[in-house]
Length: 465
Ligand code: H79
Image 1 (cartoon, rainbow, N blue to C red):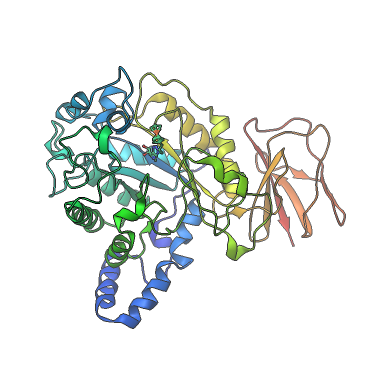
Image 2 (tube, rainbow, N blue to C red; image 1 turned 90 degrees about the vertical axis):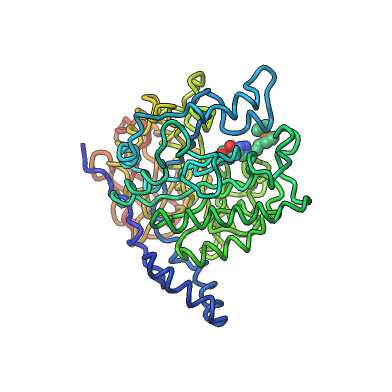
């Protein structure tokens, strides 16, 4: 097999302030005392350079894991919105007492992500149920108090750092376990949205601050924080936590679910049907936003950075009964589709209760990795391509290159309009074969072999003037 694409190391992005944590801390300290510098730092925090590694990365691994995996139930939702006949809250909240993923191997998980061609990983440090997969000093409801006894976030952070794999932390502001988030004498189904009007609420925000501080100071460089706000996120006092992230690790990116604009937006379980522009607001799984998107090419400065997160079957958590797996081809095409509109694809795995990744996920991830080992140049470091809105093809682009991903192989030559630059040459990435091109003012004609050399997606690489 071809060598795997090397993940972008954190240090490969060169923001105006370095990404080394010592430098963050030194810089952060200066910010506290100098208001003028603070303004300057704020402009840096939303700078293009900060997101450079992330824009180039394109493909990441999302990991949803907690004691819920023992019961083959979804993470947290069974206690928030219980299903008739499903697990009870009493049963759910006892699961952690027997959580013992003895076969968990953080290095193997990072290796799997790398084999898939994934360039960053995002791990659930705390889901809505409030259970912490790290050794927080501020709760007993945590991994180090299970029979397993070891800090999983620590192991993953160390393995990721060893491998030069950027690691981000999913952190849920909704917390069913914390008595200041909601009156925990009631069932979570009664008040799962939280109770910000109660006098205890500020204590919950303090808890968030303490835990985010732990995550941002104890585990090395944090590539990003993935908040999952669900509803009325304003109640979390976003600016306070943006400021905290900025002080502790200025290079850490954060998403759009904290009631303040983030570095990128996060459509969930769907791919935007057009290129997102500034002013478009995504709201998790709500697809009504699709009506506002078009196939028009935005001005570069209007582009809105985004990431689609998606499950391989239908559940975020491991579920032995969920066999509805998307095919490798579907997932490869999803990645291409996302890249063709300038986004990132964060594909989820839910580890088994023993810590391993089920074979169905592994097979698909490795198939995507194989495709990327040949076609990675058309994905990594690219942005949306110049030709949009055609049914059978998707395009990406970078520098003097355009990549045409052919979904529907044409009977004769491929003809496309809208190529406004001079095409110098065309090649199939799968075989290296050079293709004949004829270009007129309004049309580009590329001669193709009779059959698609890659049944998943065949990529044509164009070199342009
Ligand atoms: O962590 C994963 C999910 O648990 C969380 N975000 C991803 C990354 C998430 N799950 N659902 N949502 C976000 C959107 C909420 C959907 C809801 Fe419903 C509709 C909540 C209540 C109605 C779906 C249907 C869940 C319960 C019933």
